[in-house]
Length: 189
Image (tube, rainbow, N blue to C red; front, side, top):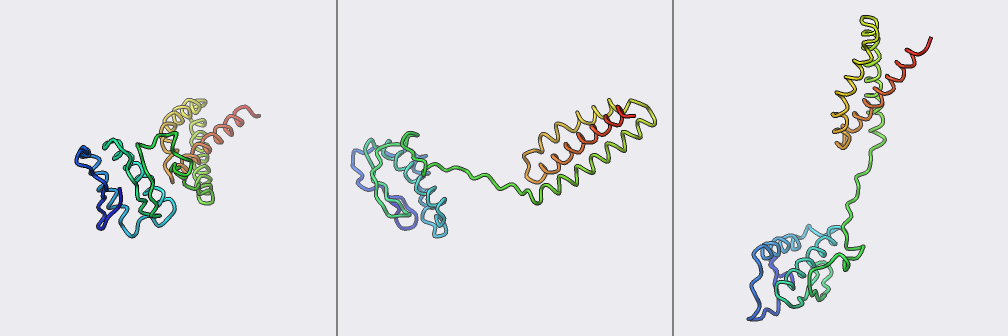
């Protein structure tokens, strides 16, 4: 199996008794050939490894469909290797695994956002609780529990959204700090 001009994938050494390749494999080979033949693809080591690995996988599927080994011509390095079947997890090396890199955490911008929203949330909870306490007494305690129960699902869902996770962190910390301050004020002199 090698990449020919125009992104076509050639399976050399076809024999008259070879079975037809499954249609989904033919489509996958065509798509891989288009990607692998683009001049702008496979410039970085990660992209090169992805093109190589996908090519080996498809060569393994071809070998499995044909019932015999297939030569795989690596379009990146030009090396030829014999592939006799689908790559199994035992035969995949650590270098062949594509490990997604986690995105870096923007602490320098995220913590100020969290701090701002934490201060705002704490101030709002303290001011409203003080006002409810002045008007209705200890009714501010169940009111705060209801507010916290209402906010919790939204904050939980926002914890994985890139920008909003900082807002959710700030609001959660601000509400907890406000509750601690309010309870300390309630228990104090």
